[in-house]
Image 1 (cartoon, protein in one colour):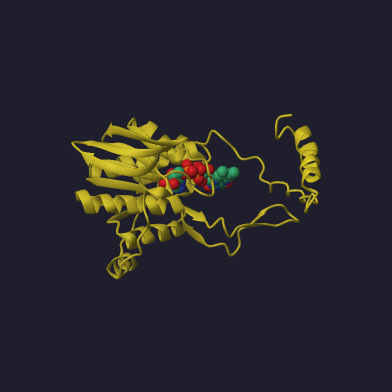
Image 2 (tube, rainbow, N blue to C red):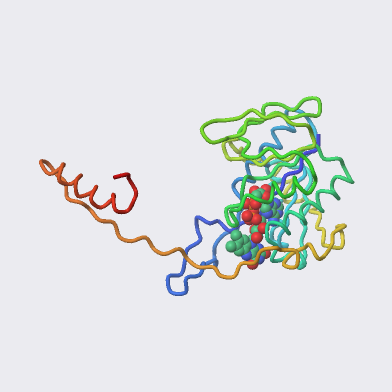
Length: 269
Ligand SMILES: Cc1cc2nc3c(=O)[nH]c(=O)nc-3n(C[C@H](O)[C@H](O)[C@H](O)COP(=O)(O)OP(=O)(O)OC[C@H]3O[C@@H](n4cnc5c(N)ncnc54)[C@H](O)[C@@H]3O)c2cc1C
């Protein structure tokens, strides 16, 4: 089995603050991390390797520094790592991102046939959850999204539990397929010392646009169907109001609350 995991380097959004004067994101000093969903995707692939054998390749698109997330994945136990990095990829929306990643996946597949591609459900910076399904559509393979448990892989097929509204759904499809995973899928283990040493010495592959059989018109800003025109901080929430209650005053407090909520259409009259 050959598992390919797509990992994205993202700013740690829990650390990103908004400058109230300029209404822009303060990115300075904000650490870059592996997208949290992708850490679970790597762990899922490693657990599959431990159960069924095979090899885990991690793939990322980003600037040269994105190598750090590949290093982390090797530290967790991945076997191979490919970074696709080129100015031609910059400014990509989810359409162009999934195109570039698909081209890299096709090249990896030529070198060693891929059985399963695993992505995170979404990236915490872009937040679209479109890249995984975009790759599956371009490759014309099945996609199973919101995967919370991998039940089994057998006879060139995979069955998983997907989180759906109000419960879970058991789905089965043939391989090769693409999964997007949520954090329920596993608990991520710490890196072993052996893997950390391996990561420190690892020889990372970097491919540019020239290494891919890609149409430049579909890459980066040129290949993007959408364009971000403006970015601004959401308006600050208004200060809350405390309705005085207290002993003996409960009914009056509820009546005051209802008088305020009904005109807002929050609760039916
Ligand atoms: C408002 C906004 C403005 C943006 N502006 C710019 C810009 O100016 N310049 C620019 O370069 N980008 C920009 N981007 C980023 C870019 O559009 C997205 O990062 C990219 O298209 C991926 O979409 P996503 O982050 O929503 O990923 P999702 O679809 O949410 O990611 C799902 C999964 O796909 C995989 N994945 C996604 N991206 C990668 C990757 N790069 N490498 C490997 N795996 C990946 C991961 O497994 C991830 O968990 C912007 C995004 C937004 C939302």
